[in-house]
Length: 160
Image 1 (cartoon, rainbow, N blue to C red):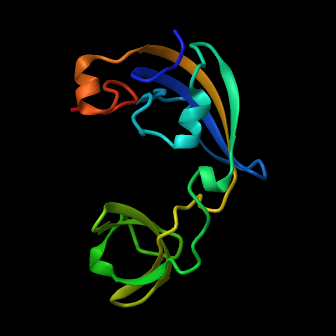
Image 2: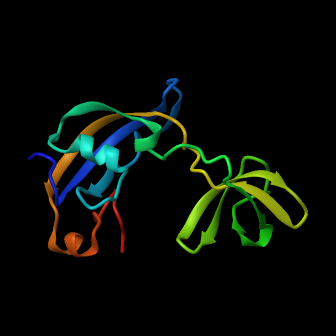
């Protein structure tokens, strides 16, 4: 079966930046599952997977604009530490979560004070061209429930 709108796709991946630095991979865990055509993964990646089939292996290169966007230099702001969700001691480089009007957002701490922290709200991969090495492990029709919820269920997908 080919990947098309309303199919559930499972894949393993290795993600690298333009200089070949490996950022993350799914090997050793469940494959990623998503509902194709519903905006559940990067749009540029989703477009490149259309038409692929179970067992296919492909490399997908995305420009920064088609991945997490260009870095916004004015994206550093001061936030009260009590509004940052994080584990462990708050340090420069810590990835924390802050609630915004548009929902939860990951930020990177760039300076820590006594009561406030300066955080960079750019995605950590903003400004990077990315390369995904992908192995499609399964493609199937979505269930009525998955279509109603707008996402894949089960391993690698959403659990209710």
